[in-house]
Length: 84
Image (cartoon, rainbow, N blue to C red; front, side):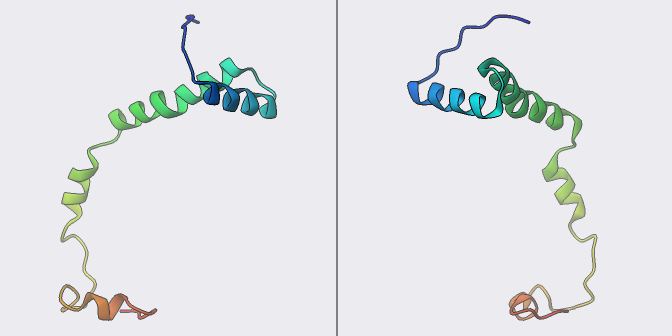
């Protein structure tokens, strides 16, 4: 492991210590877990997952409801529990 000096506000330290105490783990472990959850894993997911906008664009027009005027009268079909 690499040592790193990080500064927190008093409120952040209070929250970190309370959470660590409640979980029965050191503050350092909580900080490592938070960095992993918020920075490392999301970055890996972005690399592994294709562009979401491109996937959405490819889905356009790929499904049929069987209702010919759905685009014009969508409120009629989607309101108050109505089913197609």
